[in-house]
Image (cartoon, rainbow, N blue to C red; front, side, top):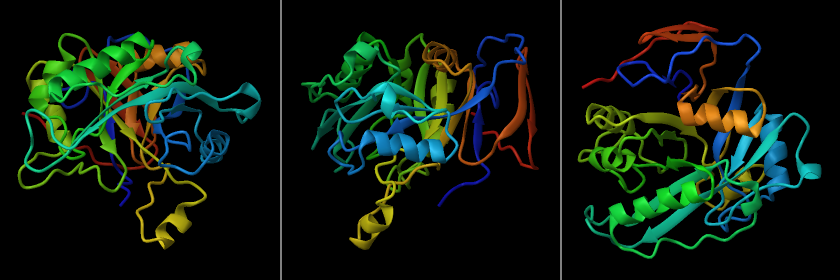
Length: 297
């Protein structure tokens, strides 16, 4: 179910704030999607150009193509007017078991590389050749950086792939983007009796001293074909359910820099009129009434 009133603001509720800078009035807020699949992934039937057209029709300013283990991009003549299509990849390692195990859950250890070097377009990326949970993640994060991208740890509660302690360790002394609200039906954002929610994971990692920038994403696989997928009795992973609003001009380098410094907020429906951060104080103005819930340790 879509949560129409949920958002994450960098710097709020005890999260570390990005460096405070005087906002430039000319710099817009761009609606962006950081987790998108096409038929290059093998688990979607929609070509990249149709995916791009779908997102533009739904008001997005940019998307990052993140197919499994293949760097995605799009030819300029296939990109709809008003949309930026940025290259990326979902570095994907799927194991039946790994060390340390988490009960009977498989180890589906995925990291997005966001806004990678365009020269890598079309390159295939092998899975990490390891069965140790931490080492797989370390290898994927390192590869994301070698590709010129920003590492983004995906769906930590999908088969409970990453604990708060592991997330904090992987982040080290550098900021790390983590997918707190993945809007697919099996991402387990709410946790279960034995695992905390992704929002609590985020707070726990912050309490351990890590700098974590939380994102919301679609992880969409199905678009115009969603009804056909449901008719087959399969879950449809659809779009325009979770996104980021990035404070940047509509250029790849500017978007990349804003993501890297945490100059964005994540939402599943709320749009803000303004947001300001000054010496740890967050001032928010929304287009309609909303309530804020702080989760802190």
